Image (cartoon, rainbow, N blue to C red; front, side, top):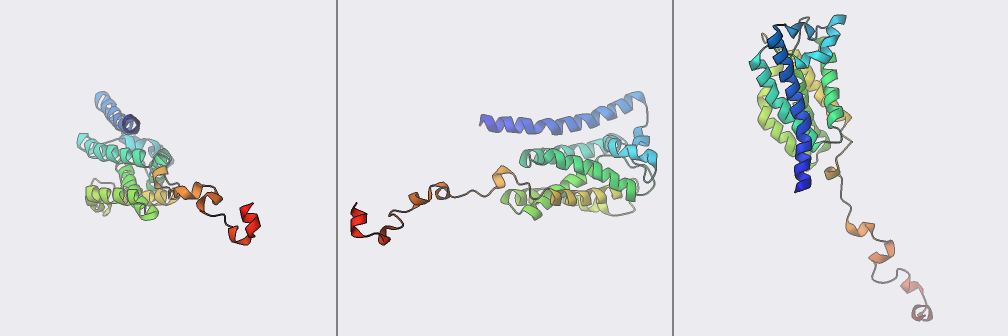
Length: 221
């Protein structure tokens, strides 16, 4: 029980830090009166490359921030707890590849907010269930389907004030990331070998394997 509690506490650390970072950046923006939107991704312009690093941290207002904070916390916690071997690497891949894809393919406006990353995380968890097909991964895929099925509407084009490209591209990056790490299974997903397979070969048999090849004198000796 103590070990399980420690694992939960350790898993909470990164999600809490991520959400705290988002709120910290937004608090600085509010207090300073500055508009951080210029640090978002601006496609196909060199200055817009900085948005790959900064845009997921920037939000246009409290409703925007709140709408991204809750799913970011839940999904990152889910990944860190259930996929610890690949959690940090997969989340970093989703973070940076989503920003890069937006810079390459999206409309030439500033794109800000963590929603692209959130869509990447949703897609990652769902497609891990498709690629790995373990009981755990399938259950997690079903959970995110129930919780975030409405997110499919977010990839529809021409939504005013919404970076649907970030949503769509983040989802595609999530699929790619799930495929990339599909072979790095967790300990609880590994096939358990039967106990008898670890026993010495001769200990599996009641009689010696060559008993019928020996003469009576050899067996009695």
